[in-house]
Amino acid sequence: MDRRNIILIGPMGSGKSTIGNIIAKRLNREFQDSDHYIEERTGVDIARIFDIEGETGFRERETNALIELLSRDNRVIATGGGSVLRPENQKLLREKGYIVFLDTSVHQQLRRLRRDKKRPLLQTDNPRARLEALFAERRPIYLDLADLAVKTDKRVARWLAADIISQLPENLR
Image 1: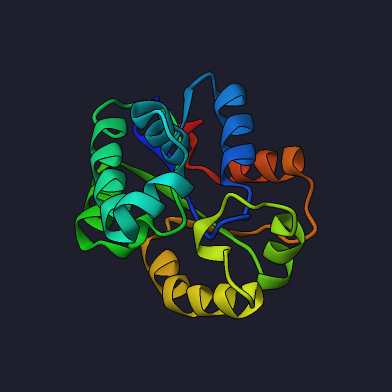
Image 2: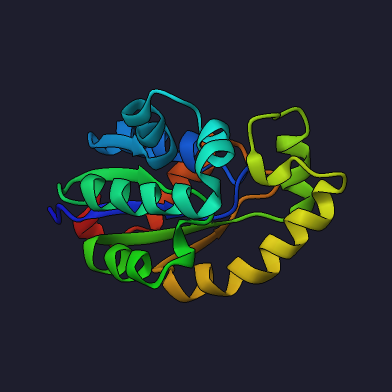
């Protein structure tokens, strides 16, 4: 069995944490969410980090978290939506795992995130415009990094996880 990490990338609201947890359980691997890891390490939520340190400070913490999380193998890791922006993170993700892109439409993101008040990048008068701008900026990076890209719109999490597992290289299952 290949002990490389399975790394989930994609925009906020794509289901990385939910799907990652299901995949980890089914493959008997440890699950880690990089945002939750940062919150546990700092003792504050992501929104508070953004307030105090800004996005630049948060991205530095995110890079350090990825280095720590990817220092061990045989995990399923859900990354933050913007973790792919830094070239050093892209290199690390490529080196340390098999990358699955959860491809979600802006419409689906809005449905999933409409009540979420904890997303700093969505605290704006026009969340749709913000998500569309993030989508345009990040989707080409997600596609470039992905070993596997899977559409998530209108799909049930457990079935989507099963579909992803079935498409993983045999040595990762």
